[in-house]
Length: 317
Image (cartoon, rainbow, N blue to C red; front, side, top):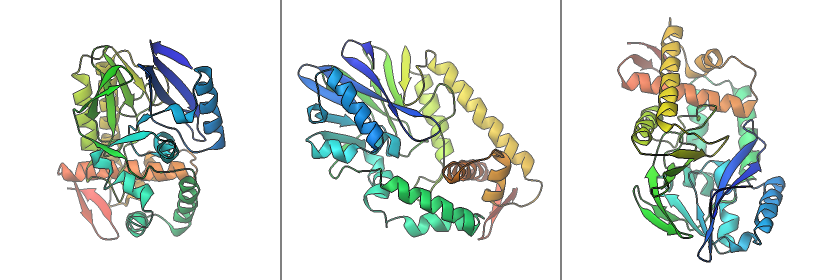
């Protein structure tokens, strides 16, 4: 645990994913305790959080406000647990019909989710591994039942601080970053990360052009007078404008790489194997596919690619 500002703490919690840990942020002041993000519902995560809270003389039930940056399981998984203990849980309004519903009503997008993979060339054997991985993940997610919808630009008074909710879609449709304007501090979630590019994937339940959303969110954050951004993984980002430009350049290079690969019509699964040739487990391969598809659809909507099918294949316009 690290105190970033008086009453603002960084809590690094282990997760069983390649990123190794997720950063939560605890605010304590004026008799109130709030948490930004909740971690995954694993025994290790709960135990780690209990120890952090105990250092501050607190327990889970003392957290009365939970601000969720987005619906991904490593940020959202314990949301329902905190809610059940009395916390008021906030989530951006865009998540309600999309990412939040994905966890709350598993059947809502199930058929469309698997059809998306199959229509874009995913082999049945690979899809089986992905389905098994998702079933295990669902066991580690306890969605809140009554979250409070957040609007873009909404200001919250939390534990003696003012936080402005900034809608930053791309990594997730309803992703929000929380901006402490007076301090020049951004709690960025996964809107931008220090070492890697946040995954930008197209899923059956997402908006139609997540990469376009992501690039617009980077532009928005780069224009703000942010002194430092504390993200959902890894360390702080001291120059948000520079990091935004680096991430933009990364995705531009990926778009160029895809165009270079399209010497003939190909499906998204095949292209994902070329764009991400490293050995990946089913979860990693799932993300690689969704990110490849997001880039292909961006190019298609920019008029640079055509799509034929189903089953779908992409070709140069």
